[in-house]
Amino acid sequence: MKPTVFVHTNAKQIVGAIVSKYSFGRFAADPSAFEVKLIETASYSWMRDYEGKLFLRDGLKRRWLNDDLQSFTVLRFAPPEIMRHEGRSLVVDPDVFCISSINELLARDMGDAAILARHRTGSKEAAWASSVMLLDNARLTHWNLRENFDEMFAFKRDYMKWITLLTEPQDKIAPLESVWNDFDRLTPETRMIHNTKRQTQPWKSGLPVDFRPPESRHGLTPKNLYHRLRRSLFGDYGLLGSYKSHPDPNQERLFFALLRECLDRGLVSEAMLRQEMKHNHIRHDALDLVRRTPTLDEKPLFAA
Image (cartoon, rainbow, N blue to C red; front, side, top):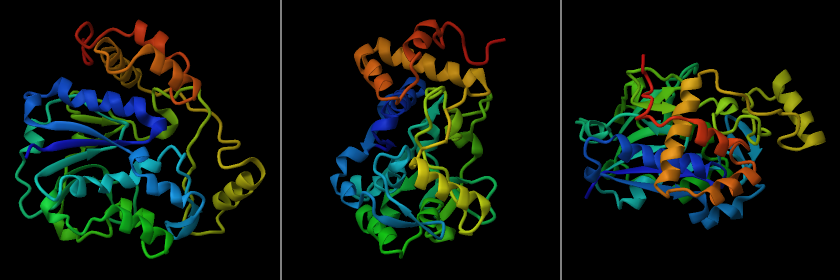
């Protein structure tokens, strides 16, 4: 069984997911050695049954919204079941783009580890970033997406502990070098760039913010009180402003150069992009940027 890269997504991030999927084959030394597939929330119809229900997140009870920008994150835990607990999976968020060959990573000796991931930054606990994980599927037979998802709504599983892998045996997780999940940092050493700061995702600039900011587990903090008042008066996304331009123009150029290649190869169409712009899923000048952005062959990322 070939190793498989899974890019998980929802409707709001489908363009990013298509670009991400394309990037793995584009830079691979041997693209025939692995497969790349999308996992979409639309394929999990049972998730809709939880709409508006309370779940546990970082000690607080929040409402589940299937239309939220990041409703796809729980799909990070689907690949072992999809692969029937055989072989290896590499699972990545739809805002992660490969800029090097991943053949060596997919073939890496994982030792006794079931999961390779990098540590999160700015966390008091030894939390992991599950946004990029190399998985030994045979060692993850205890992952049952629907059952584990349901546990959040029974308040038996905290989303934050689940998503940061703190519910896993820690001796079965080994560190992955940060260059394989580089948080908004693009250098010649970067292997996969992750536009993790949602406020500045390059394909969203200028659009109204459509993600819910996190709240701390200490319920009466000023930030929590502000967001509760804001939501009660203006709705989940009221007063959150607009997406900003990414501070690194090279990261914007990377995305639109890859999107241009996807358009040239028929992986997306102008009609689709116009529809995504209409739904505020991608910025309204996306096609103009695609036409103006040189290809990576014409102008390499780190050209002098």
